[in-house]
Image 1 (cartoon, each protein chain N blue to C red):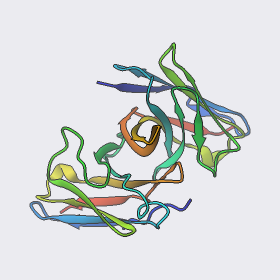
Image 2: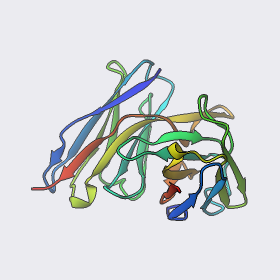
Image 3: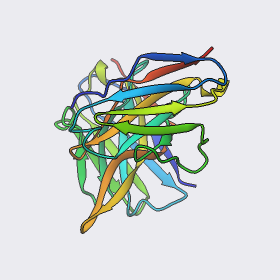
Length: 126
Length: 109
């Protein structure tokens, strides 16, 4: 059974960079897409972006200028960095595995998330 | 991309059936069969209930079903049970990205 676990600071100061890591256990990080999703307190879900195990990425256009997602296959981990944070970035951050589909000569991410971490609350405050 | 539109709340009595709608555009819900639904209990991570419009992951009750017509997807829960009370979110693929609905709170009366 695949399990995901987020880790990182729970408090970040405004204008600084939020950094989180997701550790995948019970399966290999290879051959899958891995996403970050966040949920502000009392609000809905927002997709942040994904990384393929090969390192290719895709980000939410509304966050693209501030987001970097990276992968370390040797550690079965992937990470999120969100720069220049404000109070609006306060949220529970989830990592998740994104289902893939085959097409033509390759695979694609399908924006459907079958395994999730438990989530970690990150508060932006001075 | 704009969020998909869901009703803020729905309710039903035990044993009844309810349907939650999720309306998008031809660029997301209407354009792809990559529509999924998630159940979220308070303080918990979302759980995948339906994928590819109407497929259930292993272990999900067959009381949950999904469908799509045009730009609107729907989640139907039959034989409502107390444990179905939760928030429900739809999601769709769009232009290499994912977009979620605003969420629907289901109350079991």
